[in-house]
Length: 282
Ligand SMILES: C[S@@+](CC[C@H](N)C(=O)[O-])C[C@H]1O[C@@H](n2cnc3c(N)ncnc32)[C@H](O)[C@@H]1O
Image (tube, rainbow, N blue to C red):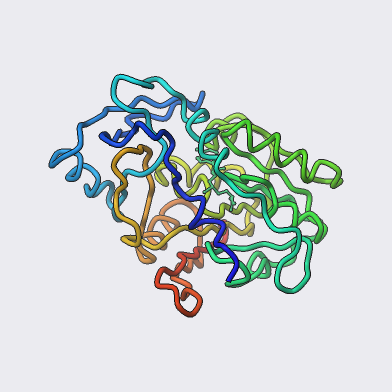
């Protein structure tokens, strides 16, 4: 079986030296810089990694942090740039021989395609945490006008190099909440595949997303199911691993209707499925 892009690439060690801390993102100002409250490994850190946050479900500390005393002040963008270094470019073709495709899951050639977004031709599509840009690029090949926003400058560079010739597709380096707060653009479709929706407090992000969406627009996103991956000491960053019912309540509370969230089964021989969430902007 071909390698899973996400299981290979999610949370590679941001620093080989950073194995003794977890950090808590204590704020997320719009320049994308975070403050970390680091804790030494051990009981305190493990308890922190498991803590519950918010009304709707749990969140965990993962990925991407500075070691205490070494790299405090490293911006979130710099952390994600480090992460990008470990990423493998998408294959030139999938199992069907297609050169572009959209994959919601962490497994190659698995799961639903873009059809859950409805027809995208002529629609304005935003991907939050677009990485190498391949998913939003696929939607542009289907007639959408696409914008990929990612906090990591290296991602924009790679996406432009790979997809820069595709008319109707743009990439921008920006933190998701900063972009949404500052833009006057509106979007018919917003998607996030293991992207910013997983990493930013939904109480902050969902209202911002809704404010930039047209009524009747579709929001869809995916991430690992809650509890499928424990806290990873030595890396930092908040991940919002909500349950399906928690996502449905959150979305209903922030201007979305018809929210459906469920875990897609993994392919045979694998144990971890994929949380897939879809809702309609009211
Ligand atoms: C696990 S990768 C997934 C990338 C891509 N969606 C894919 O499926 O390959 C997460 C991406 O989200 C971006 N990201 C994380 N937090 C973000 C934020 N707050 N704003 C914008 N991008 C963010 C990272 O830089 C990274 O490229």
